[in-house]
Amino acid sequence: MLNTALNILKLIEDNFYEAYIVGGFVRDYLMGKKSNDVDITTNARPKDLIKIFPNANFDNALYGSVTVYLNGIRFEITTYRSEGSYLDNRHPDVVSYVDDLKVDLKRRDFTVNTICMDKSGKIIDLLNAKSDIDNKIIKTVISPLDSFKIDSLRILRAIRFATTLDFDLSLEVKEAIKQSKYLLKNLSINRKKEELDKVFSSPNIEKGLSLIKELGLIDVLNLTNINKVRPCSQVIGVWTVLEVDDVYPFTRNELKLMKDIRCSIKNNPLSFETLYYYDLYPCTVAGELLGIDKKQIMDVYNEMPIHKRSDILIDTYDLLDYLQIDDGPIISELWKKIEKAILNLEVVNDKSKLLGFARMLYTNINLSEEDSNEAEAAS
Image 1 (cartoon, rainbow, N blue to C red):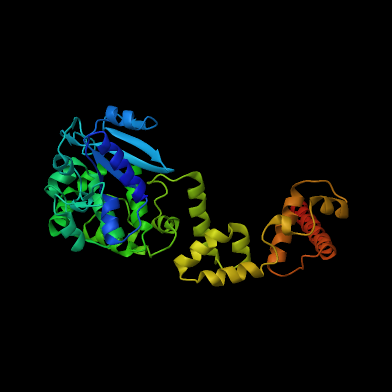
Image 2 (image 1 turned 30 degrees about the horizontal axis):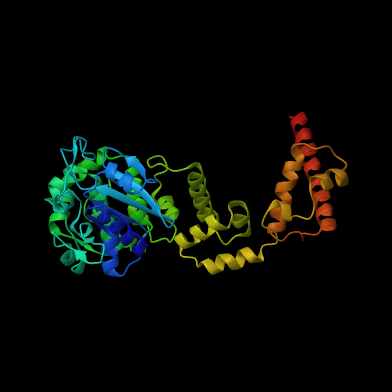
């Protein structure tokens, strides 16, 4: 990835423009961390980049961003720019292209994200980013109050970087977050969730949770259950505990998954029935939230006599034929009772034994109905 990025820089410079890798990739490179995204900044305008990279995608005309794919890797190349006022605390109303790298870096969020690398791999540090990386501190490029007013998402990005990088927020940044937290009310709920997903999926989640509480963001983020949260390797487990299904955007699948995890917690994820009806994954997440080792759950899962309906050694046609009845609601009732009986080890998953058990169930159901009808007639 790095070699391909350096080749892109050389291609741009061969056309008489400046170009640098900037931000997170360089920061992570200096920290010995793997990074998946490479951002490149240049004084070449988008129209110039399209000439250099004919297959590039001009994704964002307003912000001068061009996407290039090389060797199967995606690179975002953005023209140096300065920005006007931010009328919505999120997006600039005016963007102007510039030719000065330092001017471009000064519009960015945090100093640690301003460090650059040139085509030869040399580090370019115009805003003292290396010192902040070495000291593991998150500082804004400009006054934090002004920075957060420009873009309120930076409040959550500060917490995310402190969490994922295990850095500290500067005292000025902390104070500015406390004073600016009201700006989060107007921030898109989708953008809030994107940042919180990264905090909650971090192995260092406890630091993120601590900062959210320390900085007084619980109410503005609607995270009233935050004190119930414990570290969980699956981010859906964290959202399950927070119970904000009707506040944050979730897919239909995620909503069902959270419901199943809660049911698994309530009904014991080490139970055959719970594993059968809510499936293995929700039960392992529930187990983690309850402090149950995944191996325990896997051991129980492997001992189950059946894992799904199709594992049962009879089918509906067998029931209809053996009991000499027509299909109807009673078949659904029989299946439920047969499933539970197998899971509770009351009957062996053997065709002849299951059919005999079904006969007994059917007889009992009929007798129960007869008794009920007689009682109704008598009353």
